[in-house]
Structures are given as C-alpha cells and as structure tokens.
Amino acid sequence: MSSKAILGEEINKETESLYKKEKKLGEGTYAVVYLGHHIKTGRKVAIKKIKLGNMRSGLDMSAIREVKALRELRHPNVIELIDVFSHKTSLNLVLEFLDTDLEIVIKDKSLVFMPADIKSWMMMALRGLDHCHRCWLLHRDLKPNNFLIASNGQLKLADFGLAREFGDVKRAMTSQTVTRWYRAPELLLGATNYTGSIDIWAMGCIFAELSLRAPYLPGASDLEQLTTTFRARGTPTEDEWPGVTKLPAGYNFERFPKPQFSDLFRGSSDDAVDLMNKMLAFNPVTRIGASDALQHAYFRSLPRPTAPAKLPRPAQNIADVDVETADGGKKRQYEDAFDDMAGNGIETAAAARDRLKAEPAAKRADLRISSPA
Image (cartoon, one colour):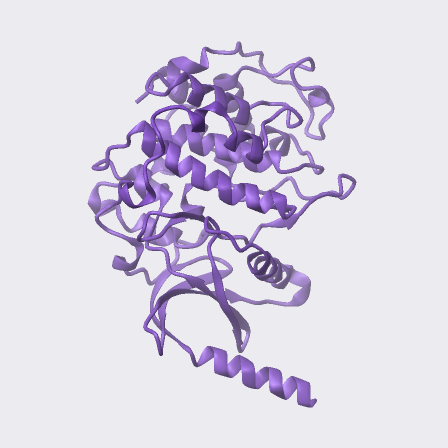
C-alpha cells in the first residue's frame, strides 16, 4: 500500500472516530439514516450510511453524485454536508441534523397554515432550488419529505441521491425519475432531454399541496398519473405544448376540458394562483424558472412571508421516533419515521397510498378538482 493510501486510511479513521451513532431514524433499499452526534462538541448530526454494491450496479455512482452535489452546494436552504467517511462496504455522509420536514407539517392537522406561512416555505424552497439550478444541477426528487426543517424554522432541500448535472441538451437522461405524484408530464411521456423545468413542476405540485393539505395529483400508475393530471389541468394540445404528440410514450388521451383552476384554490390569492399556474404549465419551455418565480408578484405582495422562527411546527419530530425496520419499499431519507407517526393522527404515506388505491379510478382522478378541502 502506498504512503498516500495509508495517509488516506488514517484520515478516514480519524474522521469516523469523531462521530457516534445513537439510533436508527430510517432505512431504505440503499441507505440507513442514524441520529448521531459529534463526540467533542455534542452537536447532533444525521449519519446517512449508503450501502455500496458492485461498481457496475450504479449504486456507487449515485453515492458519488450525492457527495459531489452537496460539496458544491453551499446555501442556507440546502442541507449541509459536514463530513464523509467510509467503513467496510459503506459510505457514510455526516449531515446537519434537521428535526422535522415539510411532509410532517402538511399532515399534522393540528397545525393551522396562514397564507404568509405558505409564502415563507415556498420562498425558502425556491431559493434552495434556484441555487441548484444556477450550479447546473437537477434535483430530480422534489417532494415534501425532501424539504427538511431546522429548529430555527429554516427549510432546507435534502436528499440528492438522484441529482444530476444538466446543460447539455443532447445528453439523454432517464425519464424514470422523480416520485410519481410530482413527476412532470414530459417525464411521464418518456422525455429523455429535459432541464430544471421538471423540478419546477414538482415545486408547483408542492405549492398546491401546501394549499390543499393533500396531494394535488395522486396517481397509482404512470398512466393514471397522466389521466389525473389531464383531468385537473385539461388535456394539452400541440398549440399549447408543441411536440407533445411526438414524445416517446405516444399520445392518445381522452380530451378533458381545462377546468377553472382558481375554483380549487379559493383560499389562495390571485398572485398565488397565477404563480402556481406558471409552475404547472405543460410546455417545459414556457414553464417559469426558479429565479423568475422568486421575482413574481406573489412574493412582493402582502402578506409578507412569516419569519422562519415563527412558522408552525409539529409537537413531535423525527428524533422522537424509533424505527428499526424498513417496509421493503424504496424509502428516501427519514421516510420510514414519518410512517410511524400515525398514532398522532397524521395520515401516513402508506395509508394515503392504500386509501387512494381502494377508491375507484374515476373518483381518484376527480378528487382534487371536486373539493378544496
């Protein structure tokens, strides 16, 4: 072994010795997340242990991408990567510990949201996303439980396991990315050349979910996801979205009229509805960007965004929940912990999926356009 390799191994062991794991917070197919602390300072941290497989499996490349992304993304609204160390066949990411997330907040029916609260969360989320896009990085997995919240109320974008650099329009990327309910229609139709507009669509869905306190476009399959989207937004035409009929998945869908979008969001201001519409534009080219979204009249109009420290917070956080096993599905950071909170009256992700699957397809498709509740 070379002297350089020996030095690297010593540094790695020294880094590992700085941290102590306390308990498991969640487990997924590729990673386990632990609550831990820095031994000397006592600072709480989250230690994400990524299970590494054969280099050809792609798992290692995903881990490398996540580390690379987090090292480059230093921003108040992006989770901080503190340290990295390896142990046997795992790579451990030491991240700042954030004790709750946006999904928990949305599902906690004891919390009351004001328009100023939603504006504050959206502003912080878009600032983090704008920074990613300025660094030519797609997140590709935006959803409420990937926005973690610090004890001071700051919202931070997390989980960059699916992140990918973009900029070369000729380079193909997979369309099988982003959790289905937040997946842009061009991805559902098989597009392999895309930009930050796919993240903006997901942000539009999150904006709607904050307003409805329920998922805006829940589909049980890719086909149902498209049908649900077209029922809620109207079936797009070539005039509205040039090239839509030429996307790989083909285009032969029932014609749904465009409903009055504002009828669903009666509690939202005209500016909020306008921004939401611009984020959920079918044509990726005309879909608003993160930077322009932050300059939208919505953020300049009253009420002013709530100060982060004054935003609603749930009584129970991730660290209070012990989770020992996964449910067998592919979980992202901390998601198992959320599913263990049903005892507090929070509808879990699994329960929501089961409830939606049990309902007739037509009812599921109409669910988000028939009632603002």
